[in-house]
Figure 1 (cartoon, one colour):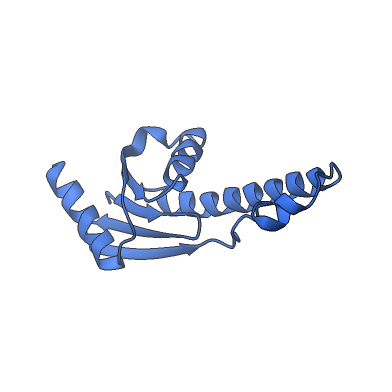
Figure 2 (figure 1 turned 90 degrees about the vertical axis):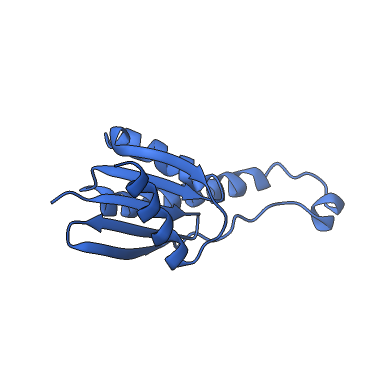
Length: 136
């Protein structure tokens, strides 16, 4: 059975729409990634630079990346059987996922990567259906 998949992705969630001969299926993958904490703002300006803070920031960044990698792997598991994949979303997560899929030897299946703003599940499903209908 042939499957085409499209997904809207950001760092918090991915909505995966799978189109098959039997119909349409929508899946959701949630990330456990918290927003990155930054050392900015008034308090950061008031405090003097402390080199001992760097390891904590590096550790936090490493932990953030590890969580994202687990998230991208979970999304890739949804896409494993797809013959064509459309990736779209608002930020850099779509490009991170694209690189991850290429590394997992799924890069040849990527039909397109597009920028899109926040969308409802219905809008996402409609965009995926329309994209693959035009590609026939």
